[in-house]
Image (cartoon, rainbow, N blue to C red; front, side, top):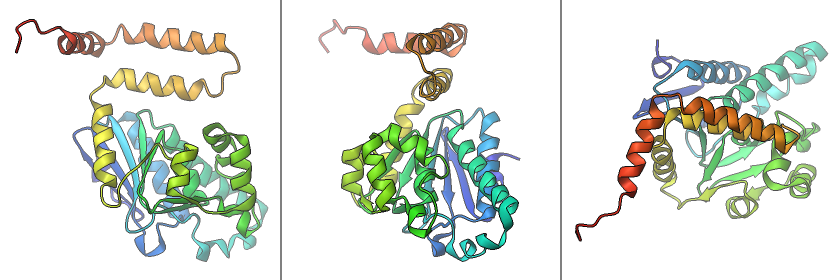
Length: 269
């Protein structure tokens, strides 16, 4: 069974022309996260590891929200789980979001509304974030007595917008609106009120025009070199990637197509 044919309770998945869209599908709860959603997100992400037809993934939310974080109805039971029970739930959530980040092809988050707490963390797992004017972000963990160091936020957010800006957002728990998010670099692109998916699909198609192998190793290099401590190690990784890609069938094809586009036109037409 293909990923697009899989049946999920908290997600919908569609695929067309190399673009797979994963939509969080609990609109009546602003797509708030549950234990079931963590399991299904991890399952969907792992299915994409071997999906050779997918070139780009779009992650978005159904209805007016992207993701409101962990469902507060379920959050009330957290204190009853015991330390090990809570650790198991936390690890399940972390595995799910890490699996999204490690999807081997580019992931675009189409942020259509509030991304709070774990929802903001989920958006950070994408390589690129595109938002409508309704997009807003906040580190809601600190507002309910938990740490803003949750689900990768304390590692990713400072690298994305700088440590001082990340600290202020984390400590206050305040809401960051769409325009400020674009200015800070939390959003790559701010769209109009009605063209979020149109603009996201436009970028996805631009990405799809490039070679699959080149995209995968570009993503691997960008992610790995965030963790490599030296310039020399980064160069070593990049060198290996380029050497591998020159042995892939799609590299000569991509080079030929690029040359054809760049060839001077001397006919005067």
